Image 1 (tube, rainbow, N blue to C red):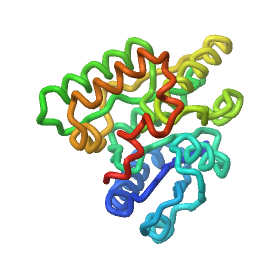
Image 2: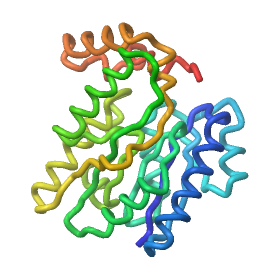
Image 3: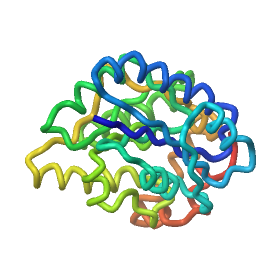
Image 4: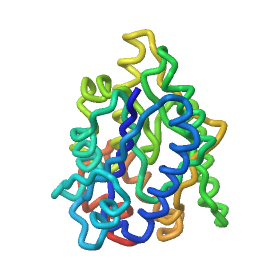
Length: 242
């Protein structure tokens, strides 16, 4: 079995080394012993810093996506993948050996089509902790995968059309819905791993106050999701702050 680990990266030279090191360590500890081979692909999403150089120096396969949009970056990385399974990990996340051990068992289950993981963020702000708790409730109840950790059979990903590039945010929710439909059709499952949440950066929750996130959420609901299709309305993720 070959797993393609895909990392979309836009100006991530500061955090990318830690992410790549964590992935290599976790994969070596948990994937390789389980007989799962893996390749590491970084999609440079038109960075202006040393993101591509950092990735290449680490030994990762580096591909380029000129249009700055995370869904496109993930799709471009997936197009270069040769694995039977795809795993999308964000450039500010550091999966653990324990999480990868859970993943290894899951990938070897023929009844699984794909899934995601709960997240672990060091949060001091009560509002931010509440927001994360709400997301965990939604993720487990509705089986929506966070884009920062989403795994799927490559054939299913391609049949679903990959990440919908009409969206600048929330694209992982729409893909999760498509994958769940495929799983139901094929009598398989789309699962959320809960035992070892993935450590990921809380920077967006810290850079923008909770009211900013709530205002964006209410606006998205009131416009029927149209804000998700406008880059300028998704400034939380595209303001360039790192």
